[in-house]
Image: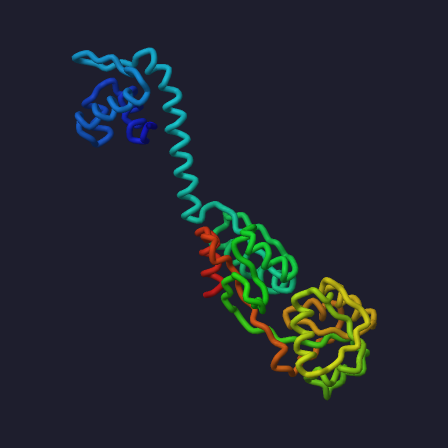
Length: 294
């Protein structure tokens, strides 16, 4: 059996007051209730903590030895309560978020800025990683939420859509396809041109390849890379053209490249929030996601 917080308070109040009536009044309890708490405290510890006379109550030697321990325990309890209350009040804590790089660059900073304005004492940890890693981090409960494309496989993940992202063709400004008449392009329009693409095991590559196969179009692949940023550099060197999510168009345009919309209904994907249905979200993450969704 261990001491309750009320019993600890009763001991400390009695040690301070040396009088049952005064201690009971300060604790807003009756004298019998206070006396019972002190008795239970002594029973648990195994001996008397106070010597009682008709007028005063004094600490025994054992009570004096226990006093600094009780004061420390009382302080630690109050500190712990204050810390958890601050977390629930979102005055402190950590927000851990995973996001695919294109989303992390284009949308996430604004979301985090707005959240930081509301809760300036919350520390923020960002994992800007490829789509597959975002999903892994959420499934492994290393982060509480992630921003990525809607998973195509039947994964044990909860997905909340935010918007639908189209795809674009990225090319050098001098490329033959960069003409005023080409406001949009199709896969048939680009079929004969050299392509730089994501690695075969990437989520993005699997999705794009499936659309090509459905339309029975063959890609002329020259190079593969594991990062969209690398594709942009290859396009800039005129090694080929690339298909990337519109999310990445700003990065491509900053490289001086041209982005033309793809007129393909199948080449679009929902972007949203993923969470682990088996993980209880912290109040901090819940507040962040509510802000994003609204």
